Amino acid sequence: MSIAENIARVREKIEAAARRVTRNPDQITLMAVTKTVSPQRIIEAYAAGIRWFGENRVLEFAAKVDAIGDRSDARWHMIGHLQTNKARRAVELFDAVDSVDSLHLARKLNLAAAGLPEKMPVLIEINIAQEASKSGLGPDSSEFEDLLAAAPELASLDFQGLMTVPPYSEDPENSRPYFRKMHALFEEIGHRRLASIRMNVLSMGMSHDFEVALEEGATLVRLGTAIFGERPPAGSNR
Ligand SMILES: *Cc1c(COP(=O)(O)O)cnc(C)c1O
Image (tube, rainbow, N blue to C red; front, side, top):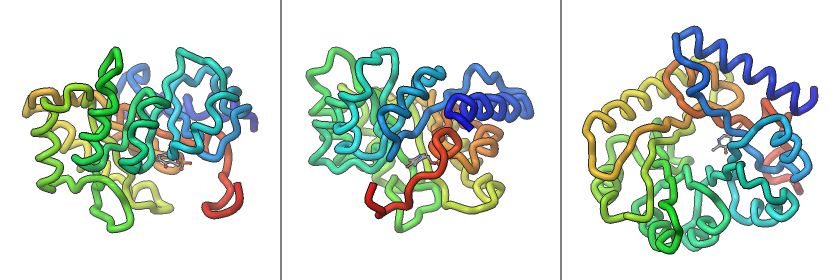
């Protein structure tokens, strides 16, 4: 299957999942995750209509960005764990950081974004199952509350919502309770009407579980494998 065919198939599935829960498919964003994907294949996805892209590593994207070329209507999001010493580079390279996982990182990004003409869009990453192996703030953690409370001081950042990666399971139904919990958190924070915090984006769902995520209220799904095929195993020479 070509990238364009994969994208067409994924779009059909997004539409079907949205209709099952009477949601408007036009209000769902498809993000193509391009880690390990070559510039040429990224351009193929762009040609097939994708405009939202996610990358996990600053240096990998930096190495590809020239070859991808000027596609200024595309949006490039950092979605992987960001070390604070790369915050400045990330702000230069990306249009948004969807993986803000500490108050310290938010402060660094805020400083780095101070000179930008517009605020830097960010999402707060939540470690919904509180897995030791994963980054993200605990949904009930004091650091999460501290970050929400600090948002008005972080005036170069535009807090738009939440992102999560639930525990991996072969059976996507096992992700459903986590997606449901994320949606409840998203709604609860939205209802609090906190200063400088918007809750417009709920980024959750990957290739194996995006349909369940959409049924549970995701506004944005992040798909790599379903668009580009299997990646080389992590740690292999890529
Ligand atoms: C790799 C990755 C994805 C996409 O994963 P697939 O299973 O290939 O769709 C989505 N989100 C994040 C944060 C990722 O690292």
